[in-house]
Image 1 (cartoon, rainbow, N blue to C red):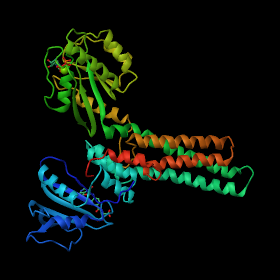
Image 2: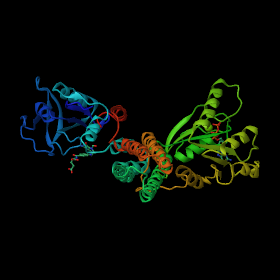
Image 3: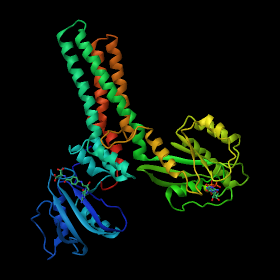
Image 4: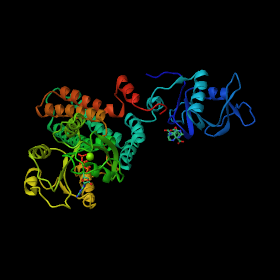
Amino acid sequence: MYREETIAAISTPLGEGGIGIIKISGDKSLEILKSIFVTKGHKRKEDWEPRKMVYGYILHPQTQEMIDEVLAVYMKAPNTYTKEDLVEIHCHGGMVPLRKILALVLEQGAAMAEKGEFTKRAFLNGRLDLSQAEAVMDLISAKTDVSHDVALGQFEGILSQEVQGIQEIIKDMLAHIEVSIDFSEEDIDEVTMEHLLEKSIKAKESFETLLQSAKTGKILREGLVTGIVGKTNVGKSSLLNALLRENRAIVTDIPGTTRDVIEEQLNVRGIPLKILDTAGIRDTEDAVEKIGVQRSREIFQQSDLVIFMIDASKKLDREDYDFLEIIKDRRALVIINKTDLEEAIDLERIKSIVGDKKLIRISLLKNKGLEALEDALEEMAYEGDGFSKEQPFITNARHQQAISQGLMSLEEGIKALENRMPLDFVEVDLKNAWESLGEVTGDTVSEDILDHIFENFCIGK
Ligand SMILES: Nc1nc2c(c(=O)[nH]1)N(C=O)[C@@H](CNc1ccc(C(=O)N[C@@H](CCC(=O)O)C(=O)O)cc1)CN2
Ligand SMILES: Nc1nc2c(ncn2[C@@H]2O[C@H](COP(=O)(O)OP(=O)(O)OP(=O)(O)O)[C@@H](O)[C@H]2O)c(=O)[nH]1
Ligand SMILES: [Mg+2]
C-alpha cells in the first residue's frame, strides 16, 4: 500500500502556462534537487533553508546542458503536504521544460508518482482523513461557487465531524452493552434498555438527515443533467442560448434545425447544470434527423431534470400529452414558450395533468419569464431544502453507500433490542454500523477501495 520510493510528477496542467511545477516527495527529494540545481553563480547549493524559494537553473548533471531557469523550494518533513520531505521546482510553464526536468528527476532516482499519490500519502500519514482527501479532488473539479463551497466544507471536515458524531453515539451504546454483558447474565434492566433505545433513535435521526442531503449533494458535485426536449420549432435552442447568454446553437424558423445533441455547462445561481439541447421530436423520413430524434427520446428518459417545452400557439398532440403524463411524476418543468403569440393550447388541461408548480410561461422573443425559470431551476435542484455552507452534504456514491449500510445495521440493532434479543446480537449490529461509518473517514476502508479512490485523481495531486 505504501511504497518507500521518492515520487515525482508534474503538478500543473500540461500545456502552455505562466509557470509549471514539478513536485518531488520522499527521503531523496533534496538529494535529487541538489544534483540538478545550480544557483545564479552556477554553484551547487548544499545549505537549503526549508520553505525558502531559491532562484537558479536546472542543469543536466552529466552534460551540464542548461534546461531551464527556475525557482526551487525544499520543505522539510513532517511539515509538508505529504508529511515527507518535499521539493517543488517552479519552471517555465511549457511542455518541454516540464517534461525535461521531470525526466531528469526520474533519472536521479525518483519514481513516477501515480495519480493522487501525493494526497494518498497525506492521508496515509494522517494529515487528512479520507473524506477530506476526496474533497481535494472535488475542489479541483468544482464548476460553480456553490459546488466549491460544498467541497471546501468537506475538506474542512464538516462531513467527517458529522459521521464521527454518530460514531460517538454508537460507541456510547457499545460501552453500555459491555457493562451489562459483564455484570449480569440475566435480562438487561429497564433503565439500560431505555437508554439504549433513546440513543439509537438519536443516531437514526442523524443518519437520516445526512442521507437526505445526498440528492442535492450529488447535483452540487456532478451537476444536474438537464435535457431540453419537445417538438420541433418550439424554441429549445433559443432557450439554451438565452440561458447561456450567447448564440451557441443555431436557431431558425425551419422545423428540424437541431439534429444532434448540443451539450453545455451552465451555472444557474451557483448550481452546475449540464444542459442538453436536443433535436425536436417529430416523425421524419430523414435518416440523420431520425437518429437525432431517437437520441432526444433517450435524453428524455435519462436526464436528472427534464425541461419539456411547448409552443403556446400550437395545439398539443397525443404524444405531447403522453410526455406530460410521464413528466408529472418526475423532476421536470413544462415550459410554455411563445406566449407573445395567440394561444392555442388548452392550459387548463395541461394544468390538470402536471399541476401549477411545474408550469412556466415564457417568451424568449420578448425576453419574458427567464427569471421565473431560473427560480424554478433553483427550487428543483434543492427540492426546497435550500443550501447552507455549514451543512454537511453527502456528495458521492461511496459515502452514500457506506452511510446507508451503517443505517441498515443500526436498524437491525434496534430491532434486536426491541425484541429483547441477547445483547451480543445488538453489539454485533452496532459494531457493523460503526465500521460502515469508518469507511467515510477512512478508518476502516480496504486497500482496494483506497486504490480505486486515488486512481480518479489527477496526476501530480
Ligand atoms: N506551490 C504550491 N501551491 C499549492 C499547493 C502546493 O502543494 N504547492 N497546494 C497543494 O495542494 C495547495 C496548498 N496546500 C498545501 C497544504 C499543506 C501544505 C503544508 O506544507 N502543510 C504543512 C505545514 C502547514 C503550516 O505551515 O502550518 C503541514 O500540514 O504540516 C502546503 C500546501 C494549493 N497551493
Ligand atoms: N414568436 C416567438 N418566436 C419564438 C420564440 N422563441 C423562439 N422563437 C422562434 O421560433 C423558431 C424556432 O426556434 P428554435 O430555438 O430554433 O426552436 P427549436 O425547438 O430548437 O427547433 P428544432 O431545433 O427545429 O427542434 C425561431 O424562429 C425562433 O426565433 C418566442 O418566444 N416567440
Ligand atoms: Mg433546436
